[in-house]
Image 1 (tube, rainbow, N blue to C red):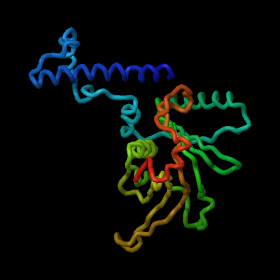
Image 2 (cartoon, helix red, strand yellow):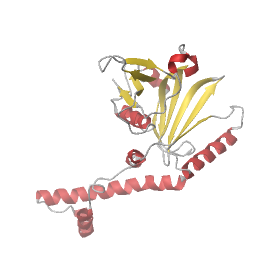
Image 3 (cartoon, rainbow, N blue to C red):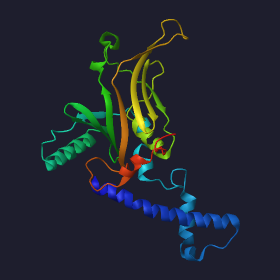
Image 4 (tube, one colour):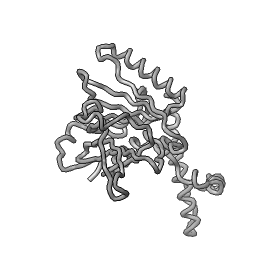
Length: 269
């Protein structure tokens, strides 16, 4: 899988070069200009390529385009697990992660979610999309579990219905990327569901909330009930490969100096 990932990535440069050559040929033909000198030896082959292009091949696709290309064709299949004891040797930890990822690929999982904790409190979340990535790393803050919600009778059992999904203020390019990673953890909506999952971004802190609603007094009377869990997330890294691929390229990293840039928002307004 590592070699396949690197091979796919190496193809992108070649495909982009071919695209630029075909673009120059098409522009010259459309404007009635001579074919560029450096392309005259390749003109016949490039024209044949142009004739064979369709909507899927006319513009080169990147590994980012392919990551979620088939996400809507089936429901996501998620493996949720916790990190090993931090006292375990790092090499053993990496070996276990690699085994988990390979096993998940073999069993057709779409994503792996790793939850980290410190002294019993969840403090980190890693979302790894399979089979090729990306992998997003989040800090977790202000975690309130379902068991810590005061009205335990009101929350009832965890619903299994496909939820309505609300993504608020993911407006930048990085925000759209982050929203895409989060939304594909959930199956396609069923219209009769009364379950709502919200990811609301404010100043690059993403609030997660989980509600159900009831219409006791008709369509204009809606009672919203929080059923937990509740927490905030802060993105600090996205890399293009899977969590076990140490050589995978970073797409975005929160650098220390960015914490002092108070007026700049990376995910939304």
